[in-house]
Length: 242
Image (cartoon, rainbow, N blue to C red; front, side, top):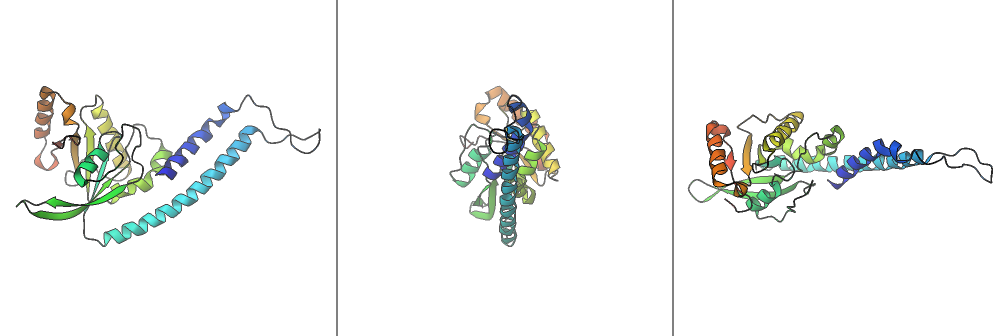
């Protein structure tokens, strides 16, 4: 995750170099007082960034290969994989912590989660005993207008979502732009080859119910019940456990 963000930041910096260094003169090259023209600061910076990008891409290739081996080993384990996806700051990590008892960083900040975290959970069964075991995976948050290179950079992190048997699309229903955020997430899922309308595979979790006033909560519950049984959203509060 850290490598991916660094790579995205470098790609972003490289496109902005032109504006940063236009005020600088060309460095002098050669020995003595009469030197030929050396490379400009912008050329030198671009070369340094390109070297770093190459190094990061090599490291990421190694990470991707290692993760593929891990996934191949997991496929042999007969546990379904459930991935939490959603807009950044929708409360995925808080919900993940609530479900698994894990201590994943849950913070009000962009990309608080970078590396996918996995935990085994034993689900309750209908008769009150222990049910089947699943593996839950917390993924990086999405943002609107995610640049193409960032989607590519986060691909390794999002591979867990692509492989998942079930996806929990966590939404912050208390947010004013919740519909737009949901549309952004659905667009990225489609880019990854996942159908967000597949009620068998994608479950919408409407989070932050504790921030809704009673009238709005009733309204949201009413909207949820209008959906067919198979694709009905679940209204929860990851913070209070409701």
